[in-house]
Image 1 (cartoon, rainbow, N blue to C red):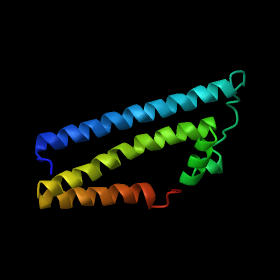
Image 2 (cartoon, rainbow, N blue to C red):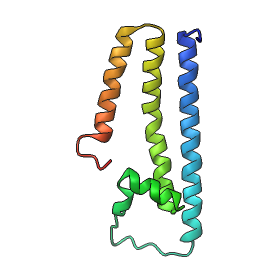
Image 3 (cartoon, rainbow, N blue to C red):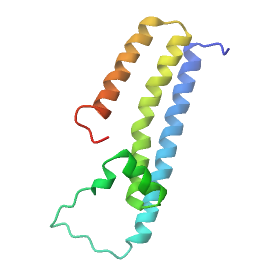
Image 4 (cartoon, one colour):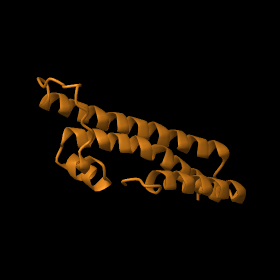
Length: 127
């Protein structure tokens, strides 16, 4: 098994952050590019507010739309990747603290994860 230290955990967390942000940026860029191709000559009407369609308010709708390369769904997927990045970092922190046998930090970080997931998935969220 790998020799776990604070330095190793910091490096792993840094790589997760870097990969998450780069992946998110690439996905949003592709979605933006698709959007511009499909709407290059469209004139916006700012007098009427149009929110997101209902299919882009659920995870299933976003994934389904992104698989069909619908621009707005791809952009939403990129934003979900960005939101998922800190969640993955907290999960990796729990694993790191558990590997170091640091129960107190593992428990507190688990509480943070619970609060984070509740705020994202519970509390009346559409996801």
